Image 1 (tube, helix red, strand yellow):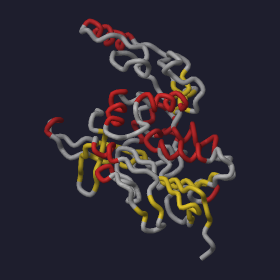
Image 2 (cartoon, one colour):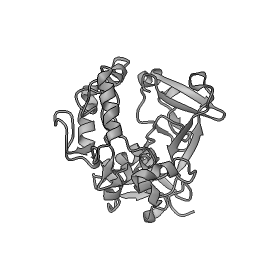
Image 3 (cartoon, rainbow, N blue to C red):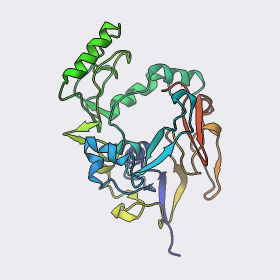
Image 4 (cartoon, helix red, strand yellow):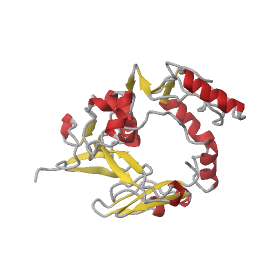
Length: 296
């Protein structure tokens, strides 16, 4: 076997977080980063057309088509829970709506012991990652890599819906990602110049020319999760985790404690029992889907 390549950091999963993490880490030219992803590249044209998500969320080539268990609260139905299996992860297949988490949720995580996760802590990060031309700069970012746009067209039917909500006592909120979330209004979307601005487009595309950032399957970035042999020379591995199942190397929300990766002897970088305690789990045979306990 040929001598294995060596990297400073191995990022497992090129989803929304993985693309951002790999791009940010590789800004340091002395840090060599390997990004691993089980899914394909984001070459499917439907990924980049805003209307195309209705095709990609049902396509097993670009999505893991999980389903919840039947639940009484939704008339006994099993609900499709697609998760991205492609460069960019869910940011490449979702409905493009740009919605921050509720400030109260972040503050609750901090109260449960997650230091650095209050809304005051994460607001600068939200601002740094986005580029949004409108809104109050106290709350919104202007120069980030991920483009956010307001509605380009108004519709009489939607305006009537907003007016009806106002009559019911719900105020119009022109920027629900600003000072407050409560209210009714048009969605903001992760779109740039008419095309989807996924994490792969926003973070990974500009970073791919860096010689210190490599993707699984060599510089061609032909992903697939097999065939690459590498080792983290400083024993640092990162597995960004979203609210859905991940490879066994990830730290499960139900047991978010420090653990050792048997194959490398590398400890996980972080442990956060407070976050795990605020999660609920929806299960199906052979898998689980977790979401923060207070989020919709």
